[in-house]
Image 1 (cartoon, protein in one colour):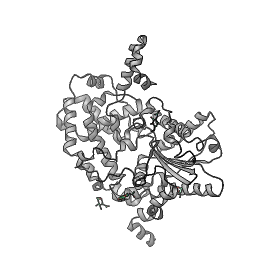
Image 2 (cartoon, protein in one colour; image 1 turned 180 degrees about the vertical axis):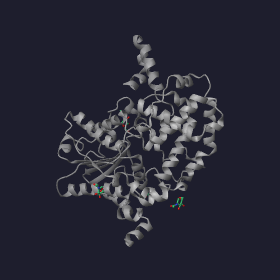
Image 3 (cartoon, protein in one colour; image 1 turned 90 degrees about the horizontal axis):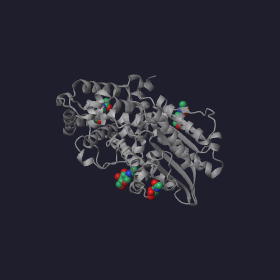
Image 4 (tube, helix red, strand yellow; image 1 turned 90 degrees about the vertical axis):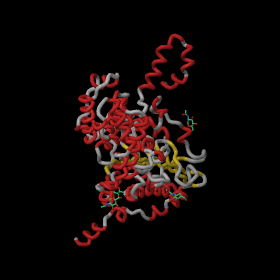
Length: 461
Ligand SMILES: *[C@@H]1O[C@H](CO)[C@@H](O)[C@H](O)[C@H]1NC(C)=O
Ligand SMILES: *[C@@H]1O[C@H](CO)[C@@H](O)[C@H](O)[C@H]1NC(C)=O
Ligand SMILES: *[C@@H]1O[C@H](CO)[C@@H](O)[C@H](O)[C@H]1NC(C)=O
Ligand SMILES: *[C@@H]1O[C@H](CO)[C@@H](O)[C@H](O)[C@H]1NC(C)=O
């Protein structure tokens, strides 16, 4: 609706009686999105990767999700979904409070936004909010559920739900459990049926494999040098200039503005927007140049902790990779020899679940690693978490039955993605299996994740 009005502005202008109202409406909707919102990384709204949803949150572009050929029919879907919009974690809430205190006590200047922060904005983040799902986060999943059932109506159907052919699996974190319940709630409301308390299974081995992979924990998670590129970038020239500009805007000595405080302002702008849909006065502390630097800092962290930076980041998710292909194999077996027992698997986890899986499968791999030094050369990098893992990000594996055999198509955030090195957007399933034969034949959780001394301990016992 909104953008239709905006697009037709000239036409609408002719309708004299409405002119003032509509023009200001268009301005308002534009102004309500911070200019830096596309750089929020893992703290970004889903709507920024699918802007058409801003106008109609339930819109499905049928030509994008239609079967690869008219003779094909969807037979199975595995969806790996990140939880919806959430509160900041306690650690980031403490940072936000420090930034707030600095601005309240030290900043001078007469700009309207600064006066707004000081007189109109009040601190409402408390530590007990610790990463919980917010109301907008529930809506993210409710709406996603409706769109997916519109996209794949033969799979996500009331009949399949009642027949228990849809399986729900989640990480144990409250924000994920709340997300999967919101997803189910979205389906019930859409079909206008009563919530009969459909179950879900908690499975952290699958959805939080990163906690259980000892090699990952020791070599990356608890290892400061594993993320040294992030630390180097924090003390880079680029970051220092961001601090300098922010100090200047606030009229505070440069020495008092640290990268952590700059990041806290970035968080404030992103959370106010994601949670409350507000273009908060805090967003004025940063411009697009600053936001690109902070986005890169976030991408560096994801790259070295969850992506291609260290081999074990990717290998830590072997168990989820095998689980997905086991489901697809089962579906292809069922399809050949009888009746399908399962149509859909909905798996809810984290950004930290999706990034290793995408990396293991070779998506968004840049030729040159992301480092503290090559920010200028990485402007058009593929590994961009703002595009890949916003809140409610989702990776869909859709198996189709076609005249020439089974085909597999992958969608990220409801848009088709092509497998690395396979040009066909929906290749034959056996081609995909062949492509990943090394991983399918190996990539064992034990082999990849156990530490030598564990094996030693085990034999001692
Ligand atoms: C739907 O997707 C197609 C193909 O990507 C695109 O050309 C078309 O503009 C989209 N339609 C709408 C209404 O967004
Ligand atoms: C979790 O999933 C894995 C892989 O499919 C499976 O082996 C394991 O039994 C599941 N655990 C629970 C508690 O369901
Ligand atoms: C920590 O990370 C560095 C850099 O990747 C690596 O060389 C080192 O072996 C790691 N330390 C441990 C204990 O795994
Ligand atoms: C794709 O092909 C390139 C070049 O042949 C190769 O280096 C790369 O490993 C391949 N990627 C995957 C995921 O197979």
